[in-house]
Length: 351
Ligand SMILES: [Zn+2]
Ligand SMILES: [Zn+2]
Image (tube, rainbow, N blue to C red; front, side, top):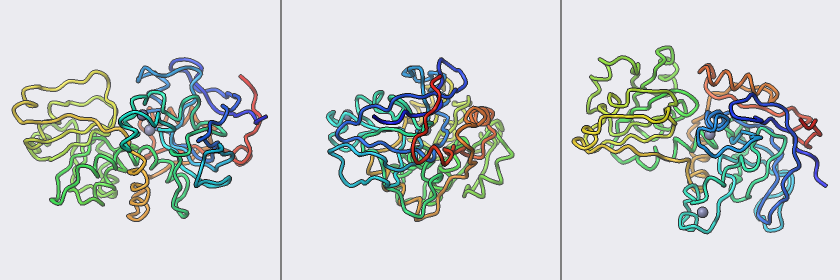
């Protein structure tokens, strides 16, 4: 009989999280149980509480930037031992059978809606259960809170920057300096892009430059945006607010590409004539495959790309959510389980 898992759940659409406890799911052959020490708060958690993706079931336990220690292993698990420190991102499993899984692109699994670590319950918990093939060993000297954020925000921006990096120094515009954007600046710099940050917050300029931005443009400054016409090879949209997408797309060179890693309010629009006449592409990029995840962790460690973090106890999850919604987090909040709950899951009150 396993100890009950305690965590924080939204009981209904858009509600504040409340303490919640549940029996841990039975381990499948390839699964591990991980005692959670750290979990980052991503804007996707907030979107999911509001059912932006249309897949949320309640009670919903968010959290998908997880670091912890293996506490139990299924019989088919290899390469991990009880006590090992591992990191887990949004993807906690995949079907292993579809065309994408078979070619090592598990993040594109046709059953992706079932693949999130949120299913059944995410990382704002004392413990979580995942397929061991989506639990990553971490560089031993990498702090757990740093690893946690790299596992979602890091991979989300590293993967497209890596795919589109070329020999020639490319001109890149990064839209938004939040959890994703502040890491994108660092990775882009390390990958030798010339980086321009486009942000709605002029007060973020100094920090954007400290992260490695070469230039800074205020998103609402139409004149400056206009000067950037035909400037960028690629725009990385790492925001979540509304933007003037027609003006943004006009900053792209012919054949340019806007890659979305953040989610703007639905739906968003732009001038279709530009798209055709300038041969532009608007595309998305979703996390990355396990191979890219391992590469990203090693690259971040080697190059010193790391998130700027506010640490808070897990019990302050609602306050943390408010800070992120108000755009006050600098730049990622990581929630830490109190020591009594990080080793052995404590018994919590069923709500
Ligand atoms: Zn995320
Ligand atoms: Zn699949």
